[in-house]
Each structure stands twice: as C-alpha cells, then as structure tokens.
Length: 137
Image (cartoon, rainbow, N blue to C red):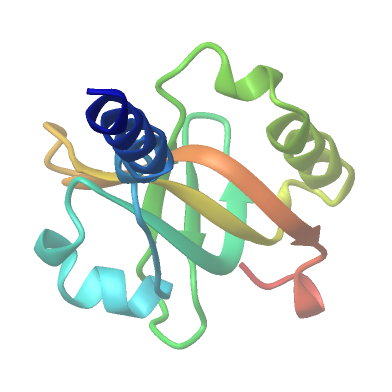
C-alpha cells in the first residue's frame, strides 16, 4: 500500500509541471507579410512579430517595407495591459519618437467585426522598441 501511495504521489508531482506548461499558449514567431498573406491561419494564435509601428489618433498598426501599403491593426482589449512596464515603456518611447518606430510585439491575433480591420493583433507584450530607420513606418 505504501508503494502504491508513493507511486501515485510521484506521478502527481511529475505531471504538475507538464500541466502548467500545457496551459501556457504557444507563441508563433512570424512576420507581418506572412500574417497579411494568410491571416486566417493565425486567428486565435498568440504571435510574435517585428515591424514598423505607427500610433495614430484613432488607431495604431504594425507594417513592413516588404509588403508596403498594408498593415495589421493593433488593439489593447485589457485594462491591465497598458499598466505593464513593457507596454508603458513602448508608449512613452513611441511618443518621444513622433509616434513612429519599430518594435517586437506579442499578442493574440483575432478576427474583428469591423470591415476596415477584419483582423487585429491584441497586444500582450512589447519589446525591443527603437526608432524607425529614416522615419519610415
């Protein structure tokens, strides 16, 4: 009986880290053009991409010079995200740079009801914020 209890306890301990890891969403590393080319393949996935970011009065987006004239609308759907240190730093730095720059953004890619922005990237984290070369976006 002792062996059975010990074995069950050991099995429970060993499965705990696996269960915790299974609950964390997998982050898909990609690029702006790949997402724009086949957006439906990224819906409801957490993606990470780097691109030129523009913060407008009513919207913000991320784009790439490799696929000009297109972009992915950026949104923040959680009240807690803007309070995160990385996202706050992103806003401060972008405002100092004339609301343009480059950044690596991680977020949940989602379908949207707005026909002008059928897909959006719901920001969760931002890193590697910098100036846009030659003020491009």
